[in-house]
Every structure is written in structure tokens, then in C-alpha cells.
Amino acid sequence: MKHERLKISKIVEELMNYFFYMGATEFNFNVQETEEHFRIYCQSNYKENSLKKLEKLVKLLHCTKHEELEEYYWTLTGDCDVANELSLVGMMIDEATVRYGEGEDVEITLYRYKVNKSK
Amino acid sequence: MVLVAWGLTLLGFGLAMDTPRGILSGLYRIIVEPDFLITDYISVGGLGAAFVNAGLLMLISTGMLRFLDIKITGASISGVWLMSGFGLFGKNILNVWFIILGVWLFSCFQKEKFSKYVYIALFGTSLAPIVTQIIFGLNMPKTFSIPLGMFTGIAVGFILPPLSTHMMRIHQGFNLYNIGFTAGIVGTILVSIFKSNGLQMDTRIIWSTAHQMPLAILLGILFASMVGMGYVYNGMSFRGLQKLYKYSGRAVTDFLVLEGFPLTLINMGVNGIFATVYVILVGGALNGPVIGGIFTIVGFSAFGKHLSNIFPIFIGVALGGLTKMWAVNEPGMLLAALFGTTLAPIAGQFGWGYGVIAGFLHSLVVQNVGYLHAGLNLYNNGFSGGIVAATLIPIIEAFQKEE
Image 1 (tube, one colour):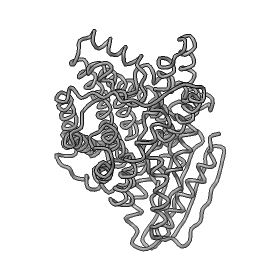
Image 2 (image 1 turned 90 degrees about the horizontal axis):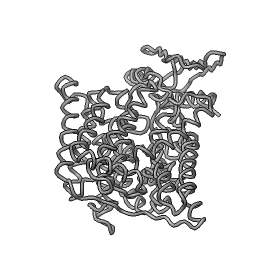
Image 3 (image 1 turned 60 degrees about the horizontal axis):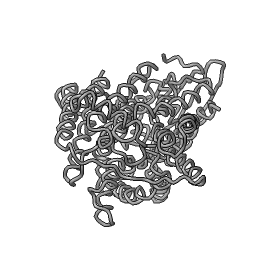
Image 4 (image 1 turned 30 degrees about the vertical axis):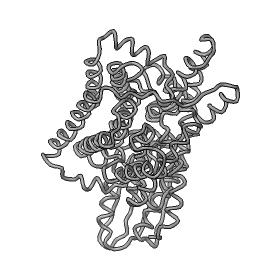
């Protein structure tokens, strides 16, 4: 068993933990599965003066995909509320878009292809 | 390229330390000698053969990563240093293949690329002594022991991927040598099966104390060159090192991915020098197992360890030595200090106080768990670290304030 769908659930858990850490009081998730990919979209508010943390989030989510690290470590995603595994999430996905601005909600869109396109 | 250069350095050092005949006969002795803890290959095969074995293992694992087209990360660096470090006490050019073959078979069974499991295969060779122990160490006819040893190694490799992934959750990544924890449990089960069939197995100590000077010089040059190269590549500065020290080090903290090659290299060199100086200051011997411990720290300095999170562990283990019945320069305590840095993320995440407690507890637990797997799990400290982390983390978190 490869736990493909469980990995998506864990990525969502990790992002939820992150939003709580950012002081979010309202967030929405949308997960879509197609023949080619999983798409995770989320939108969340956050505490003011968190822009630096969001910059770090962008950096971590843009780690390139590393299937070999994912295979060994994926169970750690979403499992801890005293530390984050956002770089691991970055290693598990193929594409990440993060949009945010002063006073606006943050919007994150992640794609995980079913066939690895990173090589 | 750098990984190859490091491998060639170890290989070259080995070749310079003995005659070709001495190295070949030493390699033979290393291969046929049972490898369970603690078996110092410098004692068994000589300085030259031990380092040739370590250098070859580093080159083989680097070649494997290259062949599988793996992007080099901190995990890759930690994997190849781990292979070379344990190439001085327990892993050799024969016994690692059966575990790797088992993991490869698992990837075929899952219809997946072997590259996805390559780190589990490399780290999983911690149970390689099982193969040698069955083939050469048990009182059985070779026609029976050879296929049994090979089969056991392959079977262990086959079950490691799902087990190691599952075990990770138990300590939440706060024990960096996760495979050590997994292999400790597998080893305990296997040894129980062996013992229930009347086979006697126990740990032992083969520990060399000669060759201090050449080894100190080798380590000094190796680690100083890392710091120097990192300093040059980092624009003739140590800028950014403080930022690296702020990471907790909990898995997955890949310094190569997060902070780049120059700072990672500096961190590796600094930690290598620190660990070597510690061993010399406490009056410990530089030999196969100790250098294996130092190399493991250096490797994992690309994947979670830095001076700020390993230092409290050293203090904790030293306290364990001062307050209990073991001296800090005894084999078990030296290895506990070096390999105990598997718990560095606890200090990095929760502060130095908890790091010291983790190191202290580890120094006591590690002295008692080797018996369970009869020294067949080379990452005995990873086994102990997993137990300590799994126990300590929920307690620490219970006393943390909600943020």
C-alpha cells in the first residue's frame, strides 16, 4: 500500500497546523483529485505582522520535489504542533503558488502529480 | 564531486597506511569476522584495510546515488558519511548488499523506483552484522549458514521500508537515527528467535587504542578543509551560520536544501572539530567506532545537527558519566556522547535544559539496550534515542504552554 491519499490528508493537516500557528480564525480547504494530479487549495486569514513568516512559508514550499525523502519521512507531516514540516511538504509536491498581501487572506495552491514530473 | 573527493581521501589514507598485501589480508579478516557491537575494524584488519573499507563504502554509496540520479541533499551527505563511518566498525563491502537487495526487492514488489527507497536502503545497513553473524559466527555448516545469512539479510531489508516509515511517528522525528530505532526492534525480535533456539549471542568489545597521531592528523585536515572551503565559498565569511543555529534540527531539516552548500560545509567542519576535540580532551581513544561516531555527526551536520543543538547532549552524557558508574572516556560513554547527538533536535526545539536531560537519560539507557539485539543493530544509540525521545517528547509537550 502506498498511502497516496493519506499523504494528501497529512499535507492538509500540516497546513491547518500552520494556519493555527499564524493565528488564523477562519480557513477553507478544497481538495480535488483528477486523473493526473491532486490539487489542494486553501485560503486563510492570519494575524497581522506575520508577513515575514509568510515569506519563509514561500521559501519552504518551493523546495524541489524529493521523492526519496518523502518516502522515508512523509508520516511526519501534520503530526506535530510544536514544530512544522513545511519543507517536507515542499518536497512532496510538484507546484506551489502562494498569494498574499497586506491585510488580505493568504491563498495557497499546491499540485501533486500522480506521475513524477520533476525529473 | 565533493563526496567522491572525501571517499578518495579515506581510500588514499588507507592505502598509505599499509602494504597492498596487508590491506587485502586485512579486508579478508574484516569480511569474515562477525561484526556485532563493538568490533573495531582497525583492530581486526589494520588501519589500512579499515580505511580502504570505509572509503570504498563511501564511494559505492555515492556511486549508487549518482546511478539512481538522486539530487544531492543533506540526507545524501549524511547517508554516505554514515556508510563510511560504520565502514570502520560493522559494515563492510560484503555484508551491506543483502539488506540493500531486500529493499530493492520491496521496491519491485511495490512496483516503484528503487530510488524512492535508497535512503532506507543505505541507512538500513545498520543490520548488516546479522548477515555476517549467521554466515561466519554461528556453529553451522557453511552450506546451511551462507544461504540462511543471505536470506535473513534480504528479508530484513524487505520489511524495513514500511517499518521505518511507521516508527518515525513514534518519536516524531526527534530521534535522527530513526532506522536505528527500527533496526533495534527488528534485531530484538530476531535475536529472541535465535536465543529461543538455543543460540548464545552477546555483545563484546574489540577496541583499538594505537594510531592516535595519524588519525588525529587525518581528522584535523579533513575538518579544517571543510571549514576553509565553506568559508571561501561563502564569500570569505561565516555569515549566516547564526541563522543555521536557529533551526531545531528535527527531521526533516536539510541544511543543504535550506541554507546551501557553503554554510553546510562550515557546519560539518566545525562539528567534526568539536567532536574530535571532545574525544581528545576526555582522554578517549581515536579508533574505528569513535571515528564512526565523529563521521556520523559530520554527516548529520548536513541534516539537522549544529553546535547549538549537539552541545547540550554532550553535557548531558558527560553528567551521566560523572554521576554514574561509567567514566566519560570509556567506550560506551564515548559512543553515547557522539551518537547521542541523535537527540539534538530535542535541544534545538525545547531548549538546552531538555537537551541535557535527553543526553543524560540516553547515556543510561544506551548502556542497557544493546543486550536486547545482542549488538546486531549497529545504530544501538538510535534504538536508545528512539526510546528516550518517544518517552520524553509527550512529557515535555504536556508542560508546554499552548501558543
